[in-house]
Every structure is written in C-alpha cells, then in structure tokens.
Image 1: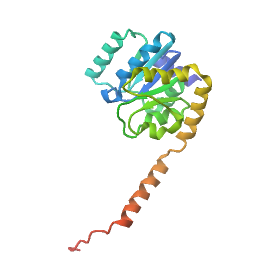
Image 2: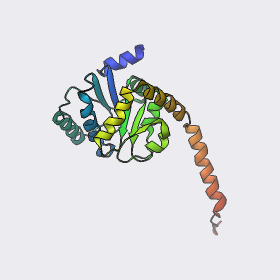
Image 3: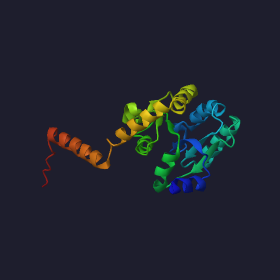
Image 4: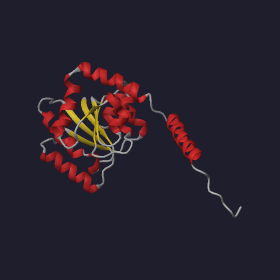
Length: 202
C-alpha cells in the first residue's frame, strides 16, 4: 500500500482512473480512447484517464488539443514515460487498462496489466488473440464500443472480478522461457524439413 500511494503522489494520479500505456502515436488510437472516455465523463465524475508513454511534440500537442476540445481538461493526464520498475504499481492502481489500438504486433502491455490483476479492454492486431477470453474487446473505430466495454467493468463488479481472475490465469501462460522454447521448436522444425546448403569451398 505504501508503494502504491507513493506512486499516486509522484504522478498526481486520481483515486479512480483508466490507464493506457504505450507510445502516444496515431496507430495506438489514443484519440479514439479520449472520445470513448468523453462519453463516460458525466456518469463517472470521479473517473480520470491516465496516459503513460512517450509522445513527440506534435503528438503531444495534438492530444492536448483533443482533450481540450472534448471538454476533458483536468480529467486526462499525460504522465510521460514510466520506468518498467513502476509499471506494476501503476497497473495495480488502475480501474481498467484500455488498449484500443488500430494495429498491434504482440501487444505486451495488456498481458502486463493482466499479470497485475488489472482488467483489460483491447482491440487491434495480436492483442485480443493473446489476451483470449480474459479481455473485453472493442471496435477501435467506434468510441461508443470502447465506452460500452469500459462500462461493463465499472458497472458490474462480478464482470470485473471474473475478468481479473481470467486475466491472471491467461498471463501465467506467457513467459520468456516458453517463448524461447517455442522459438527453438520452430527453428528445429524448419531445419528438419530444409536440406542445409552445401558449401563447395569447404
């Protein structure tokens, strides 16, 4: 508890907040997340949105303008890059982790959130596949879809509890050791089917 409160004070985090972690680029659809959050601002007056990650100057200016236009000044916080050592506490403090990316490679942050007991809303690329049924999914092109998925976690304690438990189980399926073993298995399977080239100069 002391570590969590120290992190809350360090970043001036609200008591209740949604969390996004990642580069604040267009591909990550942070603007869509802000639009989805805008429809939740009135029914959840104590809820904030925290954006953790690097943003270059043009991206930061674009997002800040979007927040102001949406009437969310003071409700959305950009806290910049957060060191890996602080991320578990940040995930643990959040009401939900929201990752409405348009396109994603592996999508590590949703699994990190799950491992910390934070329920996840995600979309785009491999993130829903990796999270499986443990995460709620949304249409990244539809802010109303993003808001509906978030509302399920906020309005239904049993849904949140179920997703947290499923997320912990799902995250436990992933480890660097398993990733290395699976990669080795692929290499061995390819080598078994492919004759090695003959170097006639040797």
